[in-house]
Length: 152
Image (cartoon, rainbow, N blue to C red; front, top):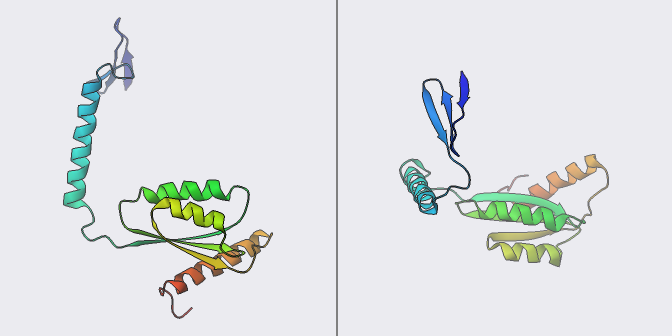
């Protein structure tokens, strides 16, 4: 049973079972304490990665089919930032319908990731079914280009 005990001070206590949890106002009034807490968390996480993490990580290969459209830069930039946060080596293969464009190339250049930009001469169809079928072919082409798929 959870219950909240209100006191006259700026903090309150929440009772969970037999234990009280003190709730402090936010932001925390002492920045030195906040930095110490972050440092402790960082040290624990680093040590856990060292002891229990992946010892010899493999390279991660990400294949992204894309095409020139209004919000392409927004979508590609969001994906780029996500891939930049991956703590392992990443190869980002971008296959672009309608041929490789300079706009996509400039986004890839900003990433600092190991990228391969492949042009696919066929244009993206308007139907969803055709769209998905062409994306599957684009992914296969990218993997063949990398030498990962030889028989397909």
